Image (cartoon, rainbow, N blue to C red; front, top):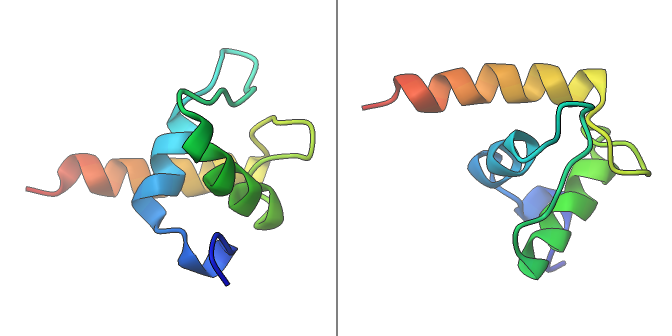
Length: 71
């Protein structure tokens, strides 16, 4: 199934979760990111109203640090 949560890679999710305002609301920089946003909502990383959840914050922290540390 195209655009399902299983087809979204962790880097795309991490980039999306990094695009947030100070209050935790996620913003899209490209219409194509809607697929990633839908997957993040399905996975519980973003709430239905577009805010980063506690799970999303943990996911972002774990994966953002790994990506920054990668050569």
